[in-house]
Amino acid sequence: MIWELTSIFLMVCIVIFHKG
Image 1 (cartoon, rainbow, N blue to C red):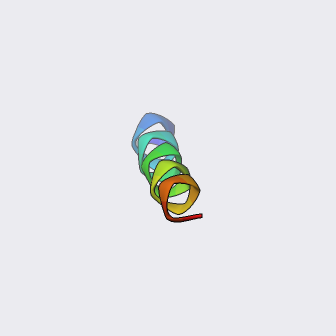
Image 2 (cartoon, rainbow, N blue to C red; image 1 turned 180 degrees about the vertical axis):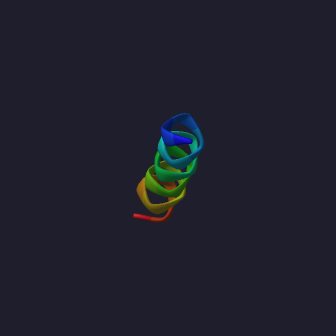
Image 3 (cartoon, rainbow, N blue to C red; image 1 turned 45 degrees about the horizontal axis):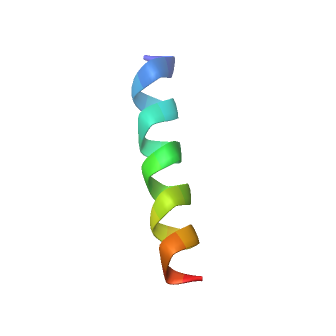
């Protein structure tokens, strides 16, 4: 559902933020 996509999107953003 949308919540699953949102959680994945947030995790990806966090990973990119930490790498940046």
